[in-house]
Length: 305
Length: 278
Image (cartoon, rainbow over all chains, first blue to last red; front, side):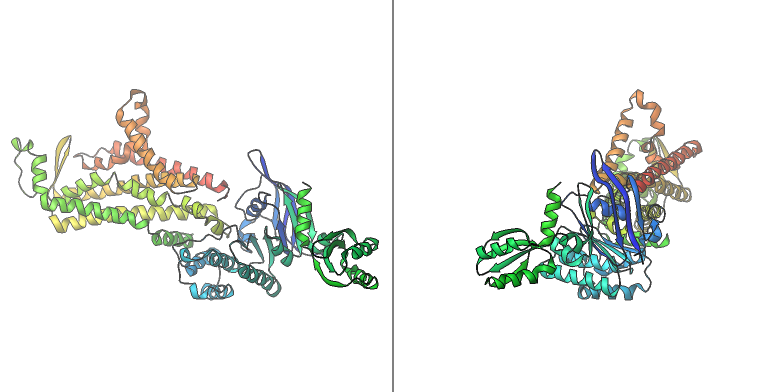
């Protein structure tokens, strides 16, 4: 059965003066995806997201949300979308709860008080609900941003740099929260980020864009492991291990690395055979560490541009 | 729509800057009244000393109406700034603080949002004028009591107390209309700006600039002066002529209405198409 398409961009373009911010961009996000939206700074990620949310009008192309044309059916489609675009800005002179109350009313949330309690609890801000937002740290504002994005039980949440301003613990909690909402509530996510590890750990599908154009789109696992994953193998005898690996048919790009290690690219399913080959040749293996594959992949794609 | 208006009113009246307007009106009106309360007779004696040779003045000349008229004359310069302070912030303030990213990604019509914002801004304008009325006429009645209104307006105009009251009512009503023009101008500039300073200063600069140029009376500009909204900002004074000039009053009212429609049309046209990039 074909998966339901929640978000579709068809040849969407946006120009600012002579600059093509977004150039014929097409993509598809399916129901239940966690979709990574990657690109270097200035690639056109934020402009694309703003067009999806009707903050910016595209010059050409079509945007469909839940199968409906956004330009025709903005009201019903946006009522099913939650978003956090760039910085989480709120009314600083109002409390966290009052901010959520305003946004909840704009989204016609039923049982608003109970819903606010629920989302504040979800992002662990219940104890600060009556504090004015101007007293919040960046991390707390980010969490409040997540809270407002789920307040109206959306089917699709678009997060632009959700890890911004969060410490490592906060970033981990954010990832767990996204996974939880995706699994337990079936919410589809589009996550734009320049923190590649964040996307690598979360996304099942992704797109990489640069200079407003799509470079590649697809399943994260297929894209990253198409030609094998990059691993660093710590061994007892690197020279001998290099010789063994060079003769191993599925290993590519084999080279010596620092600290008695060698690096090579190999299909994931062939790793046990390679380790067995090392053992047959009396090369002891102390560790096998996958390299930051998305980072390498990203740089290889962007670098070609 | 009601919901949007309530939200916008709530936002306006929880913002500290909103109360600057009310505080300023309070301070200015009460200061003028206290000044007249303690030294009013001396001031009035000085103003009418030449007239005393030709007229015999009887009764209480420092009264609620005379002081209210003086309050109106002096405050009409300040009120546009106070109005622009809030209405100039209505759209640009959201752009500057980034909150448009929150509210315009909700299922909210931009047109309805603008209507709600303008209505909330107009309510603020209305309340500022109401405060002026309450202080100048209400508090003035307590401090000075009633009496005839004495105005030096080219000629010496004297109105009995009963006659003065409805004139003040119409003058304040017209005041609300002319201040709505100022609010619309600030609102329009606000739609083009990304922070509130520009529209606030811009509104005042436009009013002062056009007024100064009009006052200089260059002959080449004379034909357009009747079509400028600033020409009609002091038109509330028309209600203090012995015989009301309905032609002049109608022209002032229609010019104000035309400018309100013009400014709002530009605002709506621009904002509905505006890319939110802040």
